[in-house]
Amino acid sequence: HRAAYLLYQDRRRYAGGILIVSPTPLLVAYTEGVLPSLGEEGQVAIRAIGSLVDGVEATLYDSPSVARAKGSYRMLKVLRKAARGALELGAAVRADHEEDDDTPRRSVDPTRLRVVAFGRRLELEAEELDRVRRTALGGTAPVNLLRPRARKLLLDALWAKSGAGARHTDPELAAELRSSFDEDVTGEDAFIGFLDAWWPELTPARVLDAMADEKRLGRWARRILNPGEVRKVARSLKRDGRTVHDIALLDELQAILGVPARPRKKRELDPLDQLTGLEELMPVREETQRERAERLAQERTEYAHVIVDEAQDLTPMQWRMVGRRGRHATWTVVGDPAQSSWSDPDEAAEARDEALGSRPRRRFQLSVNYRNPAEIADLAARVLALAMPGAESPRAVRSTGVEPRFTVVAESLQAAVRAEAERLLGLVDGTVGVVVAMNRREEARRWLAGLGDRVVALGSLEAKGLEYDATVVVSPAEIADESPAGLRVLYVALTRATQQLTVVSGERDEPDAAGVPDLLRD
Image (cartoon, rainbow, N blue to C red; front, side, top):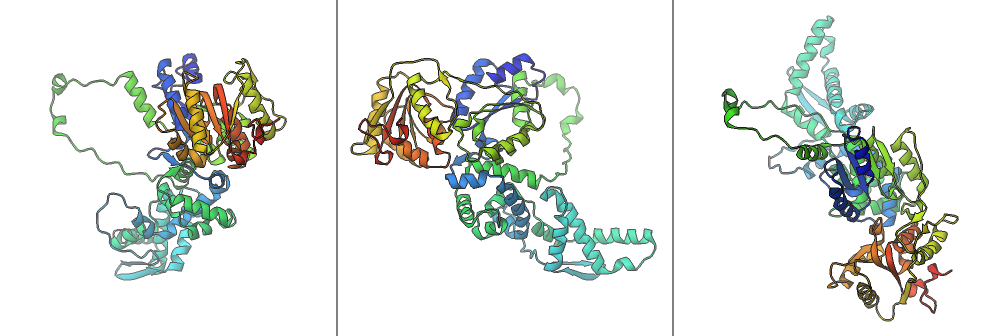
């Protein structure tokens, strides 16, 4: 609705497009369903934080400890070192990631350069090459864009070795000789092949894959990550797929590496272009306004306005990623600190301020709870008091007279959760959400198999921004213990229901005689 309001107010001002960033694909699917009814789907792009980078989608989750390492500002230093360190892997990195290329390649030793110029054989050994690389990396440009600088420095080193510069005192003759020398060397297959191996064009995916080697990552992250973090991060990068935190790392690497300029191919002459009168026989179908808007939305990398939903969950690295899409934009940032799943709010706030820049800001406090009845809101407030002492709980505007229900596992957790889901399906007309700790997601889906589309099993972090007619929260202690921000995540889980809430407790929850778990008692 915020996007529709902005476009209604000043469509020309926001012609550059509006980006809505949501925390999960589930919330994106809901928002995408709302926008067409408002008539604004053409100018508004809705993206989950895990799908902001073209060509890759987050399909995996990181453990809380890995997420803290990947999301921290510390990773910025690691990525910069990795981008430069990946060059040392040379041909190995290149060969491991060649895509759809069956062309046979001759093995090239990236530690020694040998060329023939002016009839002389010239060589640069590993130590000299390392010196050239360090000098080239002293520039401020992205790594891939430093390749021309590195190429020139190689030619300078070879020219100095040749001794040809001392043959002529006349500047014009010396310059002509140097030009001939450069042309001679750069035309050699040996030089071209060496440059490709020694300074390969790196992609974000190649560098991130190189970081999956624990020893290598340990060198690049020395004094930045501790050994335990290095081990866990490296292992997480070995998996087949990417996590939402990997997407931000890929975006950062794209900025660090840069995209080399491609020479424009000349358009081949079409024989039909030489004919005349064809426009009368072959009318051209013009692009509709909607088609043009959709095409521009796909091509757009920056926006006129950025709306960030559930902003309290963005990590510092994710703020940097979102910030690149709104360098010149106005912003709407919506979030609730009480629901934050990020363990260091101050670090995230610093990254948010960097993304927003020096733009003037207006702050609005929302204090009314329209989702939950008072009975559920009062229970959730007990957890809020533990998670953020002194924080003010939103005021619920309605009461249903239905108190939250507490049940204790008698024999099996599966049976207890399934029975409660079946009971709630009979009480409400809409959906039932079953919220479990992240490591129980797949297990919970099996528990609920066959109950139909109205019941949904989801992990605690997937519940952000969603609502259900009834909710089953499974083992509050498990949710609270899964991360340093676990109490805030539990608060989110307890506030998803619009009508009825059931809390299922196990032994770990230490329920009392009434079934109320320790965390939820007064």
